[in-house]
Image 1 (cartoon, one colour):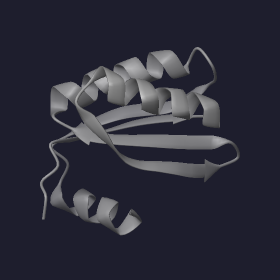
Image 2 (cartoon, rainbow, N blue to C red; image 1 turned 180 degrees about the horizontal axis):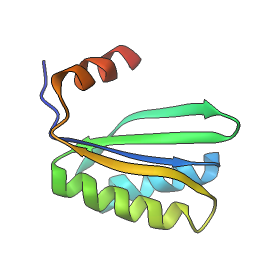
Image 3 (tube, one colour; image 1 turned 60 degrees about the horizontal axis):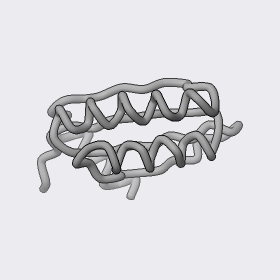
Image 4 (cartoon, one colour; image 1 turned 135 degrees about the horizontal axis):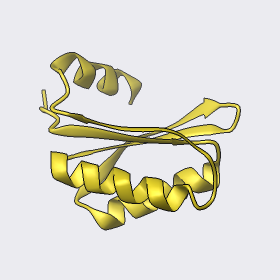
Length: 93
């Protein structure tokens, strides 16, 4: 099992804003996109993973760019997520 150092989330009410957030996040820090979820009712969530500082920078930058285009529903960084969270992420993939 791979230990995740951090997970970051940006959730928007727009596919275009979520795509902008995803692009900004991977360009601004050493993170990878772990998941891209179409939640429903126009809400889209982008999840990235990487080192804690990189994920924090990526989420901050992604949120700032996405909010220029649409409403931000939520954003968060989970440093050193519990192993059970990693299992949940693997089941989603």
